[in-house]
Length: 301
Image 1 (cartoon, rainbow, N blue to C red):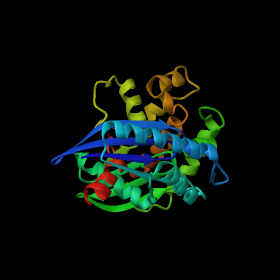
Image 2 (cartoon, rainbow, N blue to C red):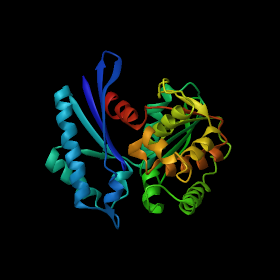
Image 3 (cartoon, rainbow, N blue to C red):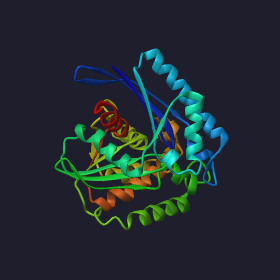
Image 4 (cartoon, one colour):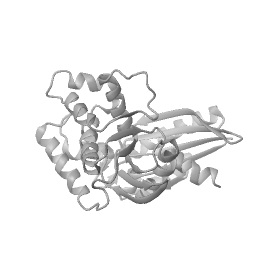
């Protein structure tokens, strides 16, 4: 059996196709379109051109999945459609024009699926999983393989860029505004301060940060899945991409050009969460909400 799973996110739409043979499940294709749905919102309404981008992308993904020979096609949406006023209209348009049924999942469910998808790849049993997308950030605290606490916060790297940054990269004043905003979002999470030694980061921003670390520390040959480094290196990464310093923008373009505008807001937000958590090490997982969705909504059925 082959399954296509599409994650309709705020920054990107991603499709992974999995091949299940007996008890083995392998990802045989991964495809994404960076469309930045947040940029198409006006007064909480997703504009027509944004809806068209979604329709075009899903039609393309459907065609690819048919060529690959997928038996089933699934699509779910996160903050991209949770945070708009015309959610029902968009879902109906997609169903009418593509035949695809979008499953809208809550922030709490997204966090739980993040854990379900990422935990099996980790080499530690206690810690945090943080998934920063374009429009939301999920934080999950777990111990001995069980979730203790979870929360979905209403910001992501693209949200921070759209809200606070006027040019391509933030200036010092905008950076301080981002820091202040994120700090206010974290202040009421009683279980987060000094909560762990190990953190797993998932999502596109996390992978971009890992590639940046690989570049700076000459570790490009290492696999992103399970890539581990010290939390204190985050400060070095922020300094390295400082656009006011020579080479900062060139470095971002070389490492992750499609995230040039969001990597600094994402780094700043991650740094605030990581510092508050007291963690010592960071591990990257390429598995997350899509794998969790596949496990719960497809394989368990």
